[in-house]
Length: 401
Figure 1 (cartoon, rainbow, N blue to C red):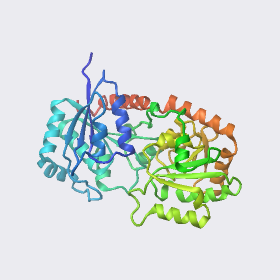
Figure 2 (tube, helix red, strand yellow):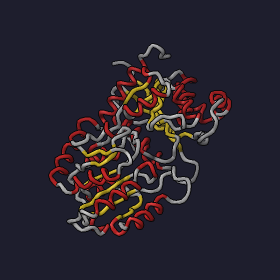
Figure 3 (cartoon, rainbow, N blue to C red):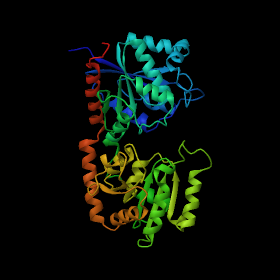
């Protein structure tokens, strides 16, 4: 048997967001007959264990190294990143130790997100150790992103993209197509049981068992479409008074001033629907929320993929969303849900109304969506795509190995 391939995942962030969850699912599902899997994870910069470390250290068959990373690069100028990396990062004992760890463990691939610090660490470590750098891009790529992040993506040996939509944005920014690998997101389907009883959530939230329930689960900020959803909800309530809307989530980091949640509540009062909208805040029991609803919607603009769509589909819930970004790669219009043009509030309301009024159509679309997740969007399929991409990367003509 050939020698196993060593792969090191970098987790410099203390939080555990959607990108970290995707990487954790890849880590958990990589074939251990072919790969030795390592993680360098931050130990945090204060008291207590950071969420990322608490979750990642539970993954089986992984060599985890707690690492002190340099402060976040944020929006800093990246003109002299390579020199800064050599002069600054190389002075860190942890950085030196990590580079030695890569050499000692014969790690051939370093894998990180596109976040500025992660990407710069990744490329710098790979250059110093002759490993291959893979930067995993989870967002539409554009000139607006920070110079450190762009430097990392531009200098990475290869880039993983979560959707064909994101892939096209990378190609438009000049990344050679041979170095971009589309690895569609997936989820652990076993965590999403469509037979779960949602009655307890309805009772907790004071929702009648015979009420129709619409829900949106996401971070709260303008591009996720919660304003448009509230306006659509006000339109459809005139025809379906026995419907409730759950808005699940907290203000996103992108919210620079004030509270977007409070802005949405004010809009709900203005539209006269505040008594029929429940702002639950963040919830750790999203499968139970999904079990309690009839239709899921997130009318986000240019969504790069939409993991939450897969979660709803896995729970046999039809999806109402927007026909742009990576969403059409996940939600098939007329089969697993209904898509409307961006900013078209009347059509968004009409699509939601169509599903709320037709129980059989909801069941048909829900069953199709669940089948698609099982067949095309499992975490194991995602890991297999990553494995195939790793093989292509290591055997490319410019590989240092």
